Structure formats: structure tokens, C-alpha cells
Image 1 (cartoon, rainbow, N blue to C red):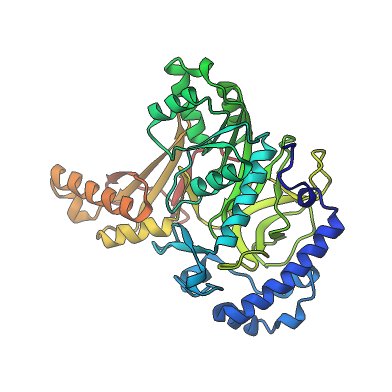
Image 2: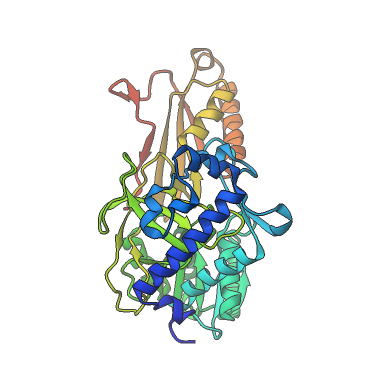
Length: 433
């Protein structure tokens, strides 16, 4: 298959690519204006009409969309196609327990799978490969995205989902998997399990496509050494489609953004002003080919740098750095989006004071997630059994809200250190950036 899945698009001259983006942007703004009352109202408020948008040079005139808009418009307020034209949803957790639900037409799914197929081919994949997908399936975009991409490439696809490590390794060995797709922390866990169980030298893996959580260059080298593979980064958001918004090529010097589907900008997170290429700022995406759920100037809150210089792989699409942090308080723990506000909601519902501290670390390549919560004076005076029961109740309520489990430690009133009168809410000990 060669090194590109869609060579004419992936190596398109920049001028041509920009002309294509302009044409698609103009069409998309008309589509959204006519079919999404929520966004039309935002445009009217900003004093912009579709006639003001002639191409990408006018993008800055359009209003931003944020996580808050998705929450306010939940579930159908940003839908741009009739429900009868939609064939699927995918979802991610939202800021206050309301989830982000993204809609797809069959055409949207086809384009998303093309993007994932490009990532697989960029990692050296072809129809000769056996691709083991250990991202979660279901509402999470990781499994379905890479699964569809692998089908498009023509690879034999093992739709394993996550967990059940013994079975993962058995299939990996017996079916001679060559490409592994999962979170980087799970890749390391699999690597260590393969070494411990003695199957490591019988594996045929040569590449891995890893995303959905932050990981360092050190972690990349660790995975590459332990599994004897080349590890590629992939980036995506449910709001935009899922993995495959951008991906690494063999150069591993930034992730190529699929610019025929997404226009990318870097803005100042404080002022919203568009920054010149090469500046560090917040990543903003506009989806120019999505039918059902098009995001216009969607603020990701990821802090990044774009690199417009030509890449020696021959792809002309702009490259983005690994996200270098976030401009909001969202944490990504074991691939799941967690907001301190969600934790606060649970604690208040449980009758606890909002004095807490979240402590995150990475031990043996898996995120640990502990929450220390100050007790009320009444609870502090209670029996050990009553305190243990309360901890269990909070753990269950947090799991219901977040979808992952945390360890909860109830501590004495006023024992969490406060700096400048405020408690430090999050202590993230992971070395991610």
C-alpha cells in the first residue's frame, strides 16, 4: 500500500489544501447557520452572517464553541442533521456529570475511519497486518475508531477492547498481532505482563498506536524497548470525531493534523486572539466535513504548538506537538476525563464539606487516583465503622459519576494544608509533559 492511505490528499500542495479548506469552510458555515439554531444565535450575537465568510482568512470572525456550549445544548441542540440521518452516537464524560454526546451520519463515520486508516498506514500498516485494538469499545471513541480504520486498511482486526490481559497476550501470540492500539499506560502494562509470563520473545509486534492520555518521550522509549516496537502517537476528541484528528508519521516529530477535515488554530487562552504560527497556545479546531455534529472553532483547552515546516515523510499537513498541558482544570486519569467540579458535586451530595485534595500519581505505568476529604466535626467524632462506611459510600458515588474508581481517605477537619487561604485542589505527581 505504500506509506500513505490517501496520497493525493496527504501530500497535497499547501496552497491547494488551503483552497480546499476555504471551500469546505464556506459550505459548512452555511450548513450550520441553516440547521443549528443554537450556533446561528451565537453568530447573530457576534454580528456575523455566512456571507461574511469567504475562506479561511475569515475564520477568526466566527464565535468559539466550548465544553459549556455542549453542556447547554445537550443532547440535540448542536445537531445539524435530522435524527433519521444519524446512525450512531459516541460519548465522553462532561464537566458536571452531563456527558458530551456526538452524533454521526454514515458519511461522518466513513471519513473518521479514513483518518484512522491514515494513522495506521503512517505507522507502517497494510492489509498484511494483524491489528489488535485494546482501546475500550462502546461509547468511548478509541475502539470503534481504530477498528474502522483497520478495516479500511484491510488488516485483520482483533476487536479485543481493554482488560483481560491474559487473553490479550494469548491472542497477540496465537494470531501473530503486528500492530497494537491502546492507551500508552496499558501498552506498558501489557509489555510487563508479556515479559513476566515469558511470551515477550514469541510476539510479532512491530508498531503501536497509542493515545487517549498524556505520555512522555521517556514512556515512549520504555514501551519501545520493552515491546521491541516503534510507538506512534495519535490525537483526537469525541467532539471532533475521536482518534485520528492527528497522528504521527515515521519521523515522530509532531502529529499531522488531517487538514482536509479540520482547520486548526492556536489562540491566546485568555484573550481568544489568534496567535501566529509557531506560538504556544490553546488548540482550536473547526470540522469542515462533519455533517451531523460539526464543531466550529471548538476550544479544546489543550496547550500546543503548530509546526508548518515541511516534513521529510512527504505529508504536507501541519504538525501539532503533543499537548503540553491544559488551560482548564480537566485531568485525564487512565484515559478518562475528570473535572474537580465533578468530585466537588459528589462530595456535597454526600453531605461532606468541599475541602478535599486530589492526588494523582503514576505507579508501574498506571495512574493512581486518591482523594483526601476533610470530615465534618460530627463524622470525626463518630465510630471507626461509621467513617469506613462513609468512605465506601463516597467511593461508589464517585465511580457512578466518573466511570473510574478512586481511593477515598477521610481525614481530620482542617488537616488539608491551605496556601493563601485556599486548599490546593490537585496534586499531580505524574511526569507527563
